[in-house]
Every structure is written in structure tokens, then in C-alpha cells.
Length: 400
Image 1 (cartoon, rainbow, N blue to C red):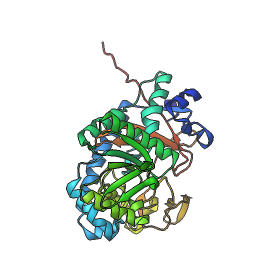
Image 2 (image 1 turned 180 degrees about the vertical axis):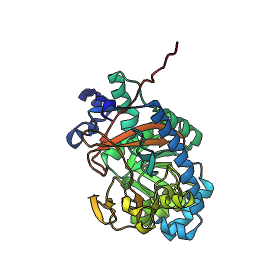
Image 3 (image 1 turned 90 degrees about the horizontal axis):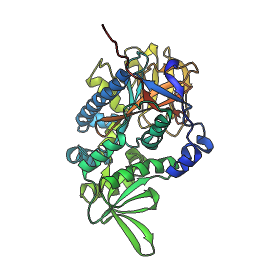
């Protein structure tokens, strides 16, 4: 692993300022960008992209099957009042998908690729992957790993045609600076795809009327009407914590007064319980990790497993258990009270400093870009470093 790591050039403060990305290099994030570049073998990069497309097909198939099964919807954590919108969305918005991100274990140093989870609602790392990583690789003079994310997003957005001539587009988040930067990327994509005026707006500043639509007060008596929402907050947040918001959005979406990206059916993909149903439907699939609602139902529970909240994020409230009883790593967080699943423990490639490396593929909806994070803990959480990816030069064998 260490032989494929090279020193990363340090980007200047003025470059971050020019890009409006000071957040990723200052204060608590000063060490967020790894000081090394990871070079992938071409075969590893190809395999990761293929795994993204294969995982996409597997989870979509499991999601569509589960959407109309009451027992599975309950297991997925979808409240009863939320199911009509999810099912309507499956039937009417099945191809309306903008972007998501798969996270994998392995895929390096001959370790098998294993699907860890899918980020269907808030696929972060967009500024790092589309802006910072290309600049780091360019300055290092290396060959970039596959990264057509920005181009693929623009192509996908043009396919979706999200704008309406009589309304604007709200790129909406809950207020964190990181979310705002991710939304900025999607807003630029919307503009490039000619969706129309796109505003970066915090969800709490919007007025949502279930009869009339979504509005923002831009000044005294001046209101902006939004007919499309690029949503960077979780559907499960609306369903589980703000049910009135869910009901308002459901009324507007099903009345076709509002389009939302990603649409409500992606809540099925966001639920980690779908991994248990995907395993049930595809037992033994080499890309999937055995996953169950009870560790006793795993084929090899004594080999280790990870306890995960169904709607957890950022590595919060995870437990890694070995030998069926020894908790060897755990994290705190805000997701400790919800339902959980148990996923067989997977091996990550590690370096001399015990960093674990997690490859990710972006789907828009086809696999279109790679990124990576690492951390010197058993659990990769919000403290992980972003590692820019290069591609090794293939050795050519000459025969005479």
C-alpha cells in the first residue's frame, strides 16, 4: 500500500479563497485534505466503477421489490404515513435520479470490493471530488483517476430537465457550511444544464404552502416561487423529525406542483436495511456483505460484524463486534435510538500508519467518478481525511 502513496502538493490559500473553498483548508479542517496522493492501478479503478454500476442495479431492484411489501417497508424504517409518497414516487419518478455515492471496503492490494452503503440523499464530497482533487492531481503532474463527475452531472441534469419557465430552482440544505458548498456544486450544474435561476437557500428560510408551493421572501413583499428543489437534506429527516414538512412536500409533489431531486423513492436506497434485503435476494453475491436484522442470522457472526443504524450518517453510532461479544470500536452520535442492521465486517486496505482506505463511486446514475477517504481508526467517520486519487501508468511488456 505504501508504495503507491506520494506526497501531495499543498494548494495555496489564495487558490482556496478564489474558489470560495477556504472552509476545506482552515480551522478544524486544516488537516482534512490528506498530505498524500493514492495511485490506483487501472484495473482497480475499472473494477470500482463496474462495482458501482452493479451495486446500483442490485439496490434498485431490491428497492422496487420492497416498495410494495408492507413487511419490508416496516423493516426499512418507512413510517406508514410516508409510504404513499414513496410508492407514488416509485411509480412516477423512477428515473428521476440526480446523484448518489457508493462507499466500498477493499478494492486495493487484492482485497475484494465489498459494498458498505449508499449515500442516496446527501452525497457529499462533491467540492472535494470535482474541484480540489483535479487541482491536486494537476499540480502533482500525475495522471488522474477516472473522474467525469461534473460532466456526468451536467449530462444527467439535461436529461432530467428539472426547470420550469415560470419558477426558479431552490438548492436547499439545513445550514451547515459543508452542505452549502455541496449545494453550490449542484446549483452550478443546474445552471449549466439551463434549468433556470438556481438559488442556494437554507430550508428554514423557505415558506412551504401545500396548496401554492415553495417560496422565499427576497425582500419586503418580494417572493420567489420555486417549482423545483435540489434537496440536500435527508428524506428520513423529514419523515422522522419533521412529519409536517413531509406531508407538505408529499402534497406538492403528488400534485405535480414541485419536483424534488433526489425524489422520495430514494429513501428506500438510503435505508441501510435495504442491504439486508439485497442480501436476502442475492445470497452469496461477491459484491455484497452478509447483512441481517439479527447477528445470529449472519453466516459467520464470530468473524466480526458492524452494528449500524438504519438511517445513520457520518459513521455515527456504529459498533464493531468481534467474536460475537467484544466491542472493539464504537462511535457516538445522533442515531442511537432508531432501528439497526448487522453487516459482516469487511477488510480495508491499510498503510504503515494504520490508515484504512475507503473507495467511493459516484452514480449519476451510471458510475462516473472515484474518490477516497482514509482514517487511522477502525471506523471511518466525519473525521476522515480526503485523499486525492491518481492513476498508475500501465507497464507495457515488450517482446522481441
